[in-house]
Image (tube, rainbow, N blue to C red; front, side, top):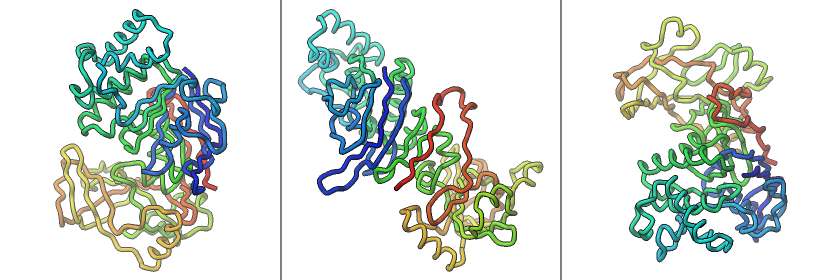
Length: 409
C-alpha cells in the first residue's frame, strides 16, 4: 500500500486545452478517494496520469514517496479496473485473473493457483473459474476484472467508472462489494465516477472537479452540508439544491416566497452585499401541519400552491412555482452566467413527508428551517455562509478531514 500525492498537475493537449489544470491532491495510505464531476471535467485524465497511461504536461506524481512521472505503468505497481472490463474473451476466468502474474514471470504455477484461488474466494467466483467471459453476467465480469487487480498485490487500486455499464440494481450490489473489498484489503483506492450516489456512499473523501479545476475535497457529508461554491452545491445532492434570488433589506432576507429575519452570522458573512443567491436543499422544508409546536418558532411558515408532486414510496417531492422581481432575477442571471452555474429557476423542489396527502394543485403550508440555508456571492459563486464541519460523528468512516478548496485561477 502507498500514499499518492499529486502536485500541481497540468495536462494540455495539442490545441492547448487544459484537461487538468494545476490540480494538487493528497491521498492517504489506505484511503478511498473518489474523483467526481460532469463529463469532460478531467477526472479520467487525472486517473490515467496517475497510472501512467497519459503523460503529464507539468507537475509531479509521487507514489509511496517516489516520483513516478518518468516510470512506465508496469513499474508503478498499480492495478487498474476499466469501465469495459478489458477481459480476454478466449481465456477462462482463471487465466484472465492469472494473466498479470504470468506476465510478471516470477511466480510458480503453485503460487499462481493459490493467489487466483484466494482472489476468487474473496469475490465469490470459485464456480466460474473454467468459464469464458461470454458466459458471465456483467457483474461477474466486473468481479473478474477486480480479481485480476487483487492478485497483482498492487500498492493501489484505480477504478475508472467500473459500474457504468451495469443496470441500476446490479450497480447497487457491486457498490457494496467494492466497498467491502476495499475495507477488507485496506488498499489505497482512487475511484472515478460521474454518479454522485457512488461518490457519496463509497468515498472516505470526494474530490469534485469542473473543467479541469479542483473545486472542493471533503468528506461526502461536508460536500453536501457545506459546499464551497455554487457548482458543488448544484452538483452534489439529488434532487439538487434550489437556487433562488435573495435581497437583504431592512434587517430581513427577502426571498420570493417569504421574508426571513436576518441572522447575525449572515450579517457578518455577507458584509455590505445586498444581492445574493440563496441555496436551499429540498430537505430544508417540511409540511407545517406536521412540524412539532416547539420547533415552529425556529423557522418560518408560508403558503404556496403546489404545481406537481412526485411520490416515490419512501420519499415525496413537491414542485412549487414562485415569482421574483424581473430586475432582481435578471441581474442575478447576468452575474451568475459567467460562473456557468445553475440558472435561476422559477420553481422550487420541496421534500415532503411521504405520508403527506398534498397533491397537484393543492394549497400547502410549508415550514422552512433558516439554519440550513446557504448564501452565495453571485459574482464569484463562493458560499459566504460556509462553515467547516467536524466529521467526528461519522462513525469513524471518514478517516481524513476536509482539504481547502483549490481556487480557480
